[in-house]
Amino acid sequence: MKPYDLIVIGAGPGGYVSAIYGAKHGLKTAVIEKDERLGGTCLNVGCIPTKTLIETAVLMRKISYAKDFGLTVPDFQLDTARLFKRKARVVDRLTKGILYLMKENNIDLYRGIGSFRDRESVAINDESLLKFKSCIIATGSVSANLPHIRVDGDWILNSTGALALETLPESLVVIGGGVIGVEFASVFSTFGVSVTILEMMDQLVPGMDRDVADELLKSLKKMKVKVHTRARVSRAVDGIVSFEKDGESHDIPAGKVLLSVGRKPNTDGLNLNALGIEPMRGHVPVNENLETAIPGVYAIGDVIDTPKLAHLASREGLKAVHHILGIEDNEDIVTPCPQVVYSYPEVASVGLTVSAAEKKGIQAESFSFPLTANSKAYVEGIKSGFVKVVSEKGSGRVLGVHIIGGKASEMIGEATLAVREGKTVEEMGRMIHPHPTVSESLMEAFHLAAGISIHI
Image (cartoon, rainbow, N blue to C red; front, top):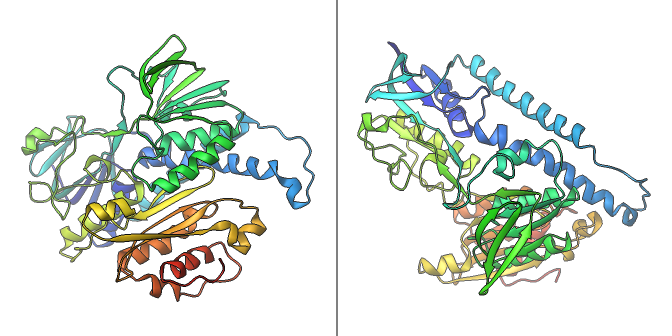
């Protein structure tokens, strides 16, 4: 039975980062991964391939208004075969990069399903047995089904199936208007597919800022995406999706259906019973150090009850390794964790909305700066969107920032620092931003929140 200081089960963004970080701190480390490729859902059938398609869609949108920039572009066509080959090439290169990092850091890689035997050992495919001092569960999540609608891999697809399509359908009905649903809707509509989104809640991307969601709705409608909120899907059979809204029943024909109603923790095969761990609503319960009830056994990422974000999983991995090494790491890493929707336009958010702050008993107010008042945004042809700052009344402490529009994903990092460090809007407004940049909109929003209006 080969001994290790640290064994990580799962090689997604949480798992492989944990392993590399542990190895760099001198821990003899092993990784167990059941899939052929490293990188987990994010790299293989999630974030990376999706964003590869999105990059093409964004370029197509820009070309569509090239005349505004003095360019005449001859008729262009989408070559789906070459697009999907590029997607595969990107994924292949990045997964090989992770394998290289494993070798460079002397991490032993075992292929198979990791299953606990007791509180200090794990088996691989019920055969090879490894002993650990510490273990991190990082097995991620899988796409969820509805009780009455399930993925069949042919007509009804999850995100993995949608990414595996070799030809585009004439129409797509997206069940679920969250991050995944909105991103796929943006891409497929740009590619010429007739798209309809059915969302059960009263807004798109539920939980995000209402004004942002409303602006996103307007943008999708301009892209000819049909959106129905407060829509309860009753069935999907024989090429027809049926839903109820405002007391009326509706039927929509669909070439394909994308079921994007969330993800559920993947604990299959772990044999948590051997540890005496009982999942709570499917999630592995952990304490503030991401340690389970079993000393030395940790869980991170989608398998625990925190937002299912790749970058949060990576940070949770660092936090778990810190506890293993005895390094103090007591900060809240969930509240100041940014979220991005790679729709068209982009949406980015960090921290609290006004309503979320008030539910916590914090008096809050918000101020928005329109991107149309930013010189660089105007130069780039950004014609809509805004930066919204949520701050605490009186103190001016930055509670949250919510952005929709071009460059949103690039600006949210600075906003994350403001929330993380508890900076005030006045302090953030004093930061010098290079001119001209779209990021000046963030500075202007902080000025507004501090009671100063310069460019509006």
